[in-house]
Length: 44
Image 1 (cartoon, helix red, strand yellow):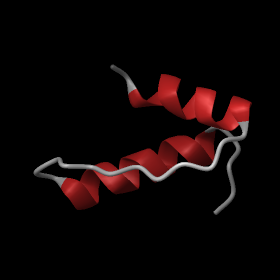
Image 2 (cartoon, one colour; image 1 turned 90 degrees about the vertical axis):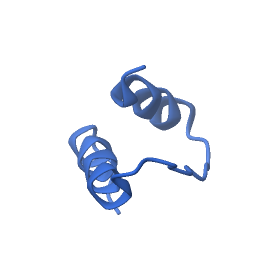
Image 3 (cartoon, helix red, strand yellow; image 1 turned 180 degrees about the vertical axis):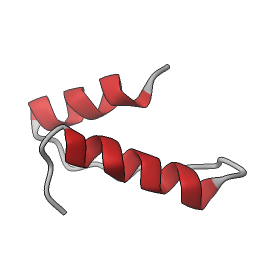
């Protein structure tokens, strides 16, 4: 499923989560997830 939908729910519910990625392109995917969270208004 698209990550952006999960990110929206995480931010909407204000939950504290740990995401574990088992992707073969771990670094690239992590940066993409960070970009999506930032686009939705989250500040790291």
